[in-house]
Image (cartoon, rainbow, N blue to C red; front, side):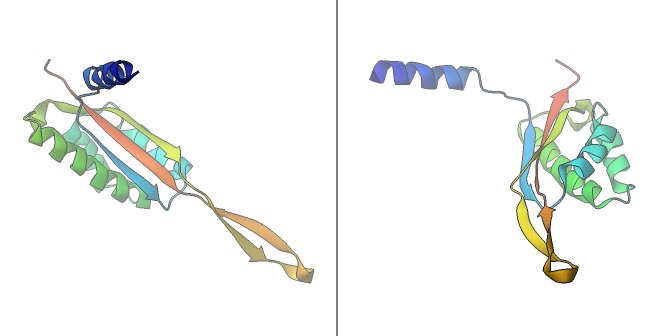
Length: 128
């Protein structure tokens, strides 16, 4: 049994994704709002993506810009050239939802869903 555990651990190490990436979790913003911003930068080179995010007025763009800068820093730490990088994958998933009550007339209440997001950005290298 211990041999199989070691084999599985070795297989995980061999199949690990080595592309530079960055993640941010528990962002207090709806995934649908973040997805709109991520769709604008997907597939662009990093300098263009940074320019787009810096000039965007949405609050989701500020979070995505910080995440992109982190991914770029991770890539440069791995020895990759910034000029050869582009946003290969970026996606957002739902995080935990806070359930709150909104008080209404006649003793009633509506439920408010305060959504959160987990955002992942993976960079690719144009030069192989």
